[in-house]
Image (cartoon, rainbow, N blue to C red; front, top):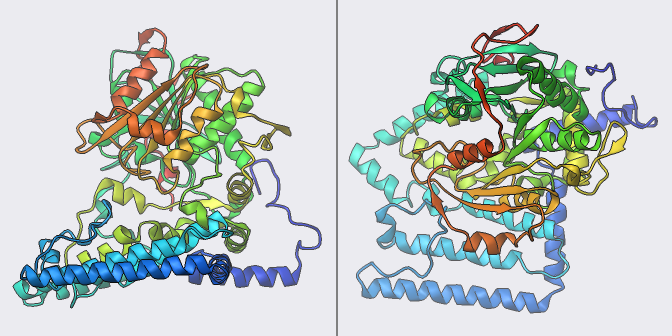
Amino acid sequence: MTATGASVLPLPDDEAGGISRDVDRFLHALLAAFTGGISPISLVQAWQDWLLHLCSSPGKQWEVRAKAIEKVARLSDFVFRCGLGMGAAAPTIVPLPQDRRFQHQAWQVFPFNAMQQAFLLSQQWWHNATIGFPGVTRRHERLVEFYSRQILDTVSPSNFPSLNPEVIDKTFKENGANFISGANNFVEDLLRLIDGKPPAGAERFRPGIEVAITPGEVIFRNELIELIRYAPMTGTVKEEPILIAPAWIMKYYILDLSPRNSLVRYLVQSGYTVFCISWRNPSSDQSGLSLDDYRRLGVMAALDEVGKATGSSRIHGVGYCLGGTLLSIAASAMARDGDHRFTSLSLFAAQVDFEEPGELGLFMDESQITLIEDMMWVEGTLDQRRMAGAFQMLRSQDLIWSRIVREYLLGQRAPMTDLMAWNADSTRMPFRMQSQYLRQLYLDNDLVEGRFRVGGRPIHLEDIRSPVFAVGTETDHVAPWRSVFKLTYLLDTDIDFVLTSGGHNAGIVSEPGHPGRSYRRLSCRHADIRPDADKWANSATVTYGSWWPAWVEWLARHSGREVTADRSGAAGDLKAICAAPGAYVLER
């Protein structure tokens, strides 16, 4: 049952309770468990589309053959130059910047340099062979290119002990002890996986003890959220409080990790009264919770309580990832209905236009969504561990193969970090909400096309008048920065856009002093012409360091006077229920 008493997502009359459809759902759920939640039908359709157009394109076939001959010639030339140079020669191709498999110096020595050059040339050829076919749908083209890359990654010479010079060197130096350590690591990981335990070392980052320790109290709780109010750390605060809506696909404390990299703590220390939503980890008996329940019982309920606690009718709204999408929906409906409580909106790695949904969105077609729905129908929720394979494939070099080499062949454990431990603290998503999200947003893109309804009436993003601060991250596989950049075109208001280094999570957890961080910033006033994304990115000034101070400065410009900080706890009738981080974040 939902919070409103509704049943689970309704099915057509001819399907509701139908035995044949139920059998199909169970079979599809079994298939999803076997494939990691990936639809094989969708995959076959993509390869079929590519293969049929390849067979009917003799010109493209000739081009592919010519490129193969060219790469064989380049490899032969390299090997010949290695012979002349006693095993060393300038490479004919270099790895992509994010490819760290061949960084060890031994990969530059013959015959290992020839093997890595052959692999990189093959990888480049397959890329050429899978793109540029007239008639192949763009999605199928990207899927084929993506999967061909995954297949090639499995046969990289770096994955094989006898071909990887770093492994060979380690084995000789340690007399094979690295394989014993690697075997122990493998057995430990396997046992933890079977027992449902987090990865080794994650127990050192417990919410409320080592992470999520910014002082605060839960002042409100309903069946979906706990609302945390953080204790002030300054004598005065801005009169407008901040309400943070994180994604419910993740635990909220990514924004309150260790004290050194806690965004919540940084805001409190900067003189703001901060509230944060902690979403419940839903169980199967909450499968009927809808996307609108998340808006109503989440963002809207929290807004009401923040107003009661502070007496302020002007609130800074902050949304991260899916929480930013929901915040945009709520703000659009509020603007339509004359509710102007948001004095500003900050959207971090948050999409509203899903036409370019990122590599994760490659999988989201009718076949894929139906498979996920049938899996959720059986279990009531979608467990993130069910989709772990799809998430890991997005970065298979780092999350699968490089980890296998490092931990099982070299016998080295990567040190656990707070961000890695948080990433292993998975959550579930209720059937009805996730089905609506995948179909209405991912598949049909209803929000930007004016078909998304709240309260029975459509909402429009261009109704939002609050100034917006949007952040995209350069290597985001979930919410590509160019998709986030579309906010500058879709919103009819002042908007500041920041493109920061890092990925979907690490780019947001980017505290001052973090090494290697940089960002570019675009400020557009309401009537300004908005630039092309790539042209702007190529010409924008790079600022080195964290984007957090720039954001806090922006918040200050859109805030009013300073008032004495309230150190008495919850205001009015809002009494503290328990200390932060609360109970919901600890649910498994």
